[in-house]
Length: 157
Image (cartoon, rainbow, N blue to C red; front, side, top):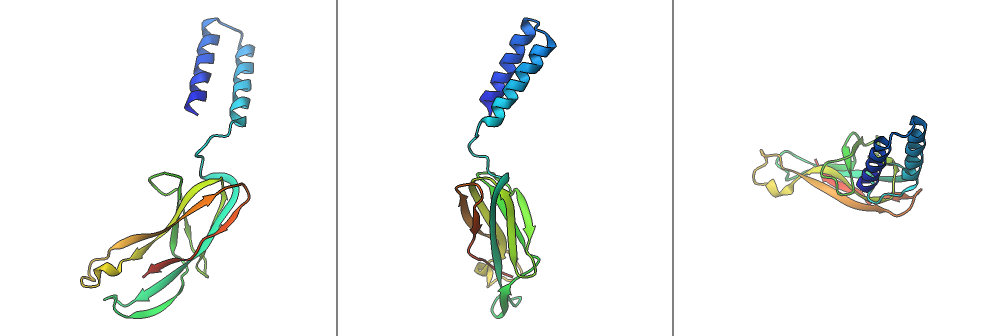
């Protein structure tokens, strides 16, 4: 994308240098934008496609000391996040439905990370400290129109 923008800047400076008519400038810009729309850029994970990633969140709910399981099941109103490609922050968030399901729609081909936060059983001896960890799944969309069902994200509440 950087190379295309650099090319556009060079053309515009050339046109400015030789004082061509405004009509010529508009034609050149239109042609270049048309060319840019035809280029398939790599690493464009994110929205704008026709694929879907979906799944469910299954929770294990323990007592405060994390020593006794109180209930387990698919959990509503749990935040699930998606990271596009190699981004360092999440790109979107979805709050699960009544049945624990989530769905990220309109995705382009690429690699994604789906995650939810979970309490850690590593702090059983110090339950006053809430340590949250990410439970994540990597997903790759290969073609447009794919519907990928992810295995349950299992969390501790």
